[in-house]
Length: 390
Image (cartoon, rainbow, N blue to C red; front, side):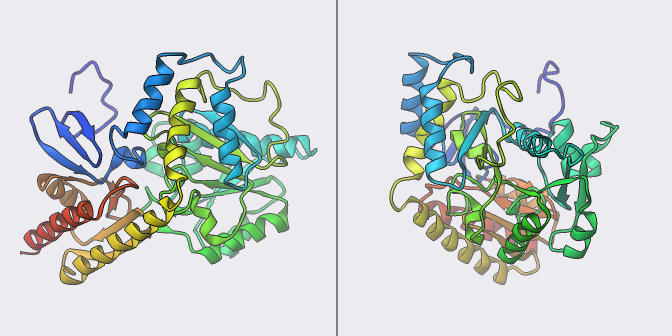
């Protein structure tokens, strides 16, 4: 890597020059099955023709205007997201971290206009991940990502998922909201049980709190529903999106009920690029595909198939793999060897997979993969486990 690039990433020494469908091709001619998808960004794989055509068409007419003016494509994208979800209104930005910043500002503003400006604290959970801005690293609370960036932004309290005694003790007169991921992806692909999500909704209702659900990685069909919290049958007050919403183009969104967003009036928040014509074209193209009849059901089917195949590998290789976890096409393999050893070995077999916390190997394939891609990834994993077991 050139010294001109700030060394904030521990990069792997591969450079890719093109992608097509579920595959990427490096500058040396290597071909890789992509089960990382830019960390759940490329929800429809590489160079999806409908997304490419939409971006090309928009780029040739109007890429950017700023939010000083009406943006018809943005309005259409918001209307479609609202029509398919709990939300009444959407704010567009450029990333999941920005969406989470908007959510944090929104809940503070909500209590401010209600006459309770002292209510500003947000309860988050151990092993969460909400982004890399100063506020979102404080919301995450992990010492590794906070180190050197003090003083920590005030306003966040952390408890363990499912520990409702600790949660109740953390709620005080300054508490504004609870913020949770339905699947703690970075934290080890830990699925939050439906009963826990349902009880969190009740705790919020009982205490006048807003419920923020961070769906940056789980949203846009990743678990087989548009939004992962739909599985638990609850309704959110605020939901944040990023990663897959643009299919590879940078865009984030903060969705909310009209009540939760009532304090977000002109001048309270903004984004220069957020939801510009080019980003909106990408987002609408993604929705065109994932809202097709049968698409979500196929994600569920493929997720069940992949999980079943992984569990078979786990049973045959229990000296290497401890368990399989996750839902839909967001799955994790708990390793008994260092997970980075498996990441490296899988890459040597031509399959890209990212790590996660708790010594987990994460699988994030495109949502439109085929069964043959599953066969290929599972065969590579079987080979790696056999070699490591020996």
